[in-house]
Image (cartoon, rainbow, N blue to C red):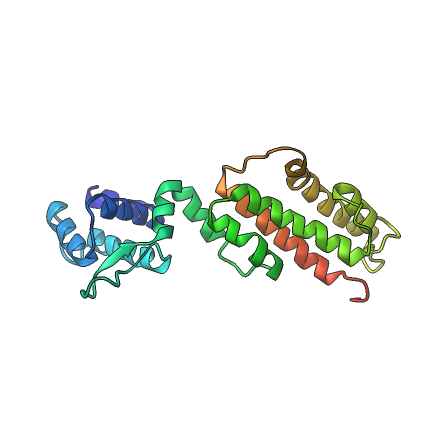
Length: 226
């Protein structure tokens, strides 16, 4: 990359390129890597390109894609972490999806969905997230185990049902029922019936975030909470 190219790309894209080059050149000292780039790219110390590369290394550290190498005494010694190698294998969309999911999830999803997502098991993570919504609705509504999927949502949230809230405008209550039923019907039920491939990490992250929203909404409408 020329200096103009270095400063024009996004920080995460530049950081991944730096990481790939560090692996390719077996870099173990990020400071020496920077000195080498100044020489080969004709970058002045402190120039915009030099600063951008330093930012890229800092970004890699903050995302734990590189870490201090415990086998070296140099303060600049680094190693590529397991997550770093995984990021290189899966690519930039995965990194951005992880960033998208870098929020506090409900405890259910922190335990059931986030670990699978970080391992790259997007199908399992998305299904598990929506399964938690189904389980929580059934438990909160007090409905039997044979109530599943869209039918469960309609039974729980229908007018006169256990999760129908008279304090809401009727149209809002119906919309709430449709929101839960649509989410389960689109993102949970197909995975229950056939193999569904979530090869898009961003889509899987959005499904988990949608499940998180539904669980938070549900906690606000538990019977007796009004």
